[in-house]
Amino acid sequence: MSRRADLPTGPATAVPAAPAAPVSPTAEDRSAATPADTLDTMSARTTYLLVDGENLDATLGMSVLNRRPNPEERPRWNRVLRHVERAWGQEVRPLFFLAVDEDGDIPFGFVQALTTMGYQPILLRGAGKVVDIGIQRMAEALIGRDADVVLASHDADFAPQMLDLAAHGHKIAVMGFDEFMSAELRAVNGMEVWDLEHDVAAFDVPLPRLRVIDIDDFDPRDFL
Image (cartoon, rainbow, N blue to C red; front, side, top):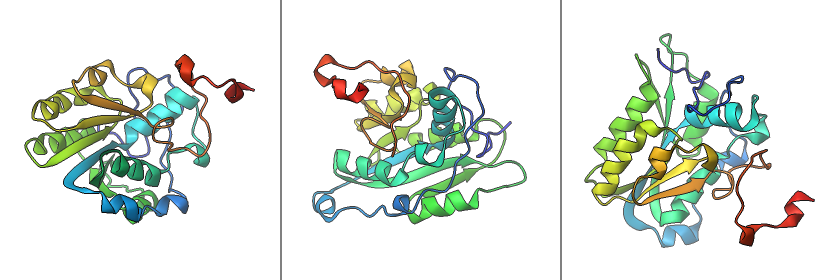
């Protein structure tokens, strides 16, 4: 059975709860222009951002919040794109993978907002975990090309493709919620791990998460 865009499936560690459905980004999200100072330092190499939207959305709703997210608790996708651009100083090709059901129902509002921000929505239909299959095929197609890869997902199913990319000299990173990232992805040699909240600053409000804090980074004022 394919995964519906409005019924995401989270990682194995997710706590069962009502799944989160994507909503259209805010007006701020639609402003994703790259700052001029970033453009001046861009390299000729391309970063491909592969977004497993269902996995991220389900992990947010089922594992972090244990409920359906409110609009202000969802990622700001323009910030995600800008973070990736700045991290490696390269042009970014953002691909957002979504599954649609056999009837071809498409979340048009969400898709149009993604397109406005510069994302390329990739809508997949068919048997099995079509989003996983699509991202795996895309990662395999990038091996040997003049490109690096950022994966936005927690799913261990992508570890073999990320291993192959690293073995062929591509820079690789994975983005999501640190505490729910699969051990297989973490173990890939050369993998950078970016926390969607704390590293990317993709949210307007703090999320109710438990995390280990390095003592040098501990600020008591955060808990007053």
